[in-house]
Length: 261
Ligand SMILES: Nc1ncnc2c1ncn2[C@@H]1O[C@H](COP(=O)(O)OP(=O)(O)OP(=O)(O)O)[C@@H](O)[C@H]1O
Ligand SMILES: [Mg+2]
Image (tube, rainbow, N blue to C red):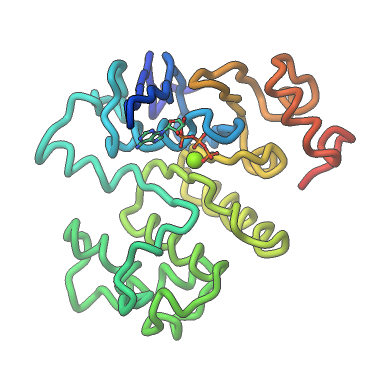
């Protein structure tokens, strides 16, 4: 395997809220190679989203270190951190819900181009149209409010937005979990083809092992803030070793029988 693009060592994070302590991350280490998709799967509350947020420097860990593309990401501040942000992008379950209701599809996709000053203003409509086309959306959607497109279209817009900065890595947190099975399958196909075409590394997070299996080269299984198992995707599914992985396989009868999603 080539040198990792992303490497995390000993990440820990405990939340204290209302007198309760929640250990969300308890010494997590992982690495992702350039162009590789690492699937991260585990039961609700095991720390997946916290790990995603910590890797993106949206939540500060209590302990641990993150290296990305040869720099110590966890130590970057100010302008140097800002310059790193376009290189690692994120897609959430409903990433556009936080947008102003009047924001259009063109705003959602074009904002990163403007914010990071990647494309001059007059070239932006063409750049947005090309991104929409690449994710299978008509350029005619550009003027539509993001709140007025379907869930599947909205997730394609979110992927186009994430691609806008030409990132080396994308973190997807339950990005297809709210979609119906047919739409989900099409979005997963799109992700796999984009990932191959552009050599983008992915951390693909889901509580659903079948979905993770469909897109990942390797899978890490998380439980209670720790990674309890890690291996090639087909190996983890065919021969799960940890009780957590076994339970996740058993929860998807088609997988247990050797099928796909
Ligand atoms: N901002 C926060 N404040 C307090 N506790 C938090 C916060 N964020 C997460 N937690 C707690 O940390 C633990 C891990 O949560 P996290 O959201 O990372 O899990 P998850 O694996 O993403 O779950 P899900 O599959 O339901 O999305 C949980 O116990 C959760 O309640
Ligand atoms: Mg989560």
